[in-house]
Length: 313
Ligand SMILES: Nc1ncnc2c1ncn2[C@@H]1O[C@H](COP(=O)(O)OP(=O)(O)O)[C@@H](O)[C@H]1O
Ligand SMILES: [Mg+2]
Image (tube, rainbow, N blue to C red):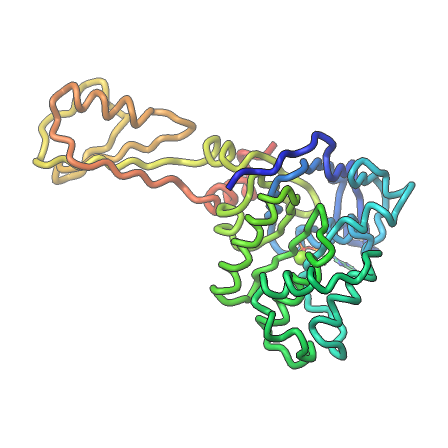
């Protein structure tokens, strides 16, 4: 899907943001810039400060110090107008149980200073498979349906920036898949998405950039692909059609031959040693290469490495 053109003004600029509760420092000076049109995944363990950061930007948490600019507007100068273009899918279900599904979306439009728009409400409900529930009382919805309504509420006013705070925690596979598809659709329309998640595969699947936060500090912010390249390890298994004899001398220490001499493994770190070069030497030496299998390390391994020292910025 083609990406919508993105403007160069950052969507969000957070500088030296601090949030202290009594004796807890939830945010210890976070500086972060989010670009228009990107999907940014904020990863970190429980209590890292993810929800607090989102809350500060959305005006639900009062910051201790620091500055935040939304769409170029300082939130200390104008705390209201820029926030009309933000959508939030909160971690916890938080809607009034006494409205119907479509009523709650109508109220949401009003809350974001938008006129009622029945066509838009129907569109969002259909997109989230809630069409048949339009007139149901929200309290009568199943857990999964409540989640879908939370997402519908966050999106109905066509926000330019959407926060998804652990949107798929505890949801079924079908909803997760629907949501991923919807996030990609949002991005293709130029919407900026910031999501927090415990599911690393979710970040790996969706994100353009990844930030890792722990104890209120951003440990790193990096392009996802670059991060995986920089810290990730790639294991390449090369299988031979018949057992081989002695490896070419140039491969000493670069490749590990299996006991049965029918395969070897090259562990590439930061691109070294290059599995491609190893392969070339094998081909040139006339080795009977039958199969090459690559397994890149997952973001999960990378994250563990960052959180436990090493690799951090
Ligand atoms: N209302 C609050 N009062 C006191 N401490 C809080 C409050 N909200 C969050 N905290 C603390 O701030 C830290 C960050 O919490 P949070 O932002 O919810 O983390 P995350 O979303 O990454 O799990 C935690 O230590 C948490 O206990
Ligand atoms: Mg949280």
